[in-house]
Amino acid sequence: MVHFKTLNDFNVKNKTVIVRVDFNSEVDSQTKIVTNGVRICTHAQGTLKELIEKGAKIVVLSHQGRKGDIDYTDLKQHAEILERILKCPVKYVDDLFGEKAKNAVKQLQEGEILVLENVRSWPEETQKGTPEQQSKTNLVQNLAPLADLFVSDAFSVAHRDNVSMIGFTAVLPSAAGRIMERELTQLNKVLENPQHPCIYVMGGAKADDSLEISKYFLNNNVADNLLLGGIISQLFMAAKGLSLGKGTMDFLAQKELLKLIPGIQELLTNYSDKVILPVDVALNVDGKRIEIPVSHLPSEYPIFDIGTKTVEKYVKIISKAQSIVVSGPLGVYENNNFCYGTKTIFETIANSKTSILAGGGNTIAALDKYGLTNKISYISTAGGALVEALMGKKLPGVVALETATETKIR
Figure 1 (cartoon, one colour):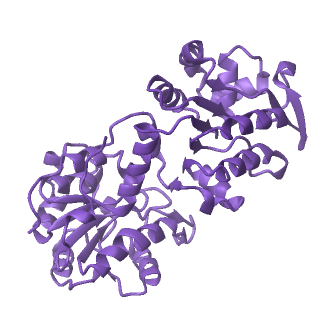
Figure 2 (cartoon, helix red, strand yellow; figure 1 turned 120 degrees about the horizontal axis):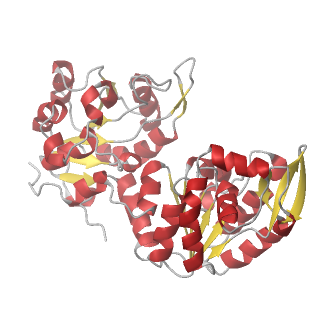
Figure 3 (cartoon, one colour; figure 1 turned 90 degrees about the horizontal axis):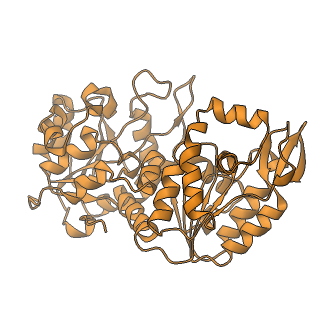
């Protein structure tokens, strides 16, 4: 069970609050213009709006890309987007912890908000260390004396021990923001107190972590069944000894996924009844959808979706679930000829009226494509942090909140 303080534990009126959010957004590679501000909107309508209404003086820290990457920019346009969402002035300075930044922090009034420069403009941000070590860096040493409270709201960066994520927790009273609080609460429901039967629907093309996640869910009795699709299901079928075809096997080898097969075989030995694999698949035969039973494999054509009989089987299992975790589409959902598996399974999940946790970029995109977003009880915007949490790993940003200084707010 995760224990941490929230905004409910502090009176922030007329207090200076440093808030670490995740404004990292999709950016046009040519113009450097933000093309999707969903994360900015999420933080704005949650933690930041609440802090404004409670009269705090708000200092926002965030990142956008990494130096040298095409999506690296300053945060000026992020501040402008935030201003439009909040419908109130948002200040911005192109400085992180120098005199310009510190003067801007000191001049803040109740209910005002200031966005500082991209934390990754400072090379030391991504150095590794403990909260105590990170608290001795220039960022924390310069900004912490000006603040009364640190709020960590960037769950999607919680798997990193970056200075701005953990350094302030060693020297300032600290709380989880509303996004962080909701993410951890939902994860706790799934990982520590799941309602059974608990079903984990796992698909997509990123199979690297699938073995560790599967092990954690099954070894800790979190999931009653794993329903697999996408590249992950193909990897598991190969581990079971099914001959998929040279093209598919070459693809798995190219992605360096075949090294996972011995571990998957061990997992299948222990939990063969809980890991549910496709019984039929849809092949891409020159652009056409052709379904065949898995017993008719191998095929020279690539597998692009789960088949109709598999969908029927998965729907029956999902209909009995009390909690569901869904991560990744079950086929090439972007192609309308191969979206049947993903669309049908996601619609079934959305209409199941159970506790649902959905996460991953392609999962969110697919839910949005089919108009199902509002039917899901919780959608995580996190990527790597969610994956590591599902693998049972301790996240440095969460541990720092749990062990934060007990110093009372000034």
